[in-house]
Amino acid sequence: MVRLPLTPAEVERGQRLGALLRRARGERSLLETALDARVSPETLRKIETGRVATPAFPTIAAIADALDLSLDAVWAEINQLERDVEPTSPGHNTRERLAS
Image 1 (cartoon, one colour):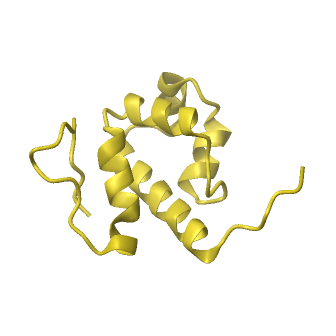
Image 2 (cartoon, rainbow, N blue to C red):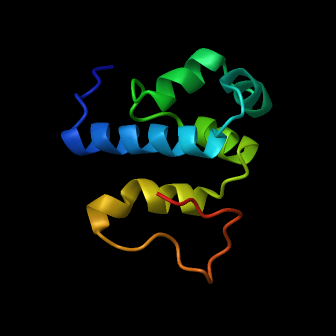
């Protein structure tokens, strides 16, 4: 199977995702977060540094759950610059809304 190269927009979205997860993790250790999400620390490290720009959905769902983030909030934040809109509005079901 041939994998197409990522577009610049996909690479940038992956970098925003990594930055979001690092901010959400805060002072919590990468190892603790990875273990709670049941992913390898190296996988989490690669996602946080943007080396994996398009991680699998179950992986992101597990990490978001370990960090108590809603997937709606994650999606809204990583796509915010592309759409030039505000993050998820207060009426939506989000567990946590992240500040930039």
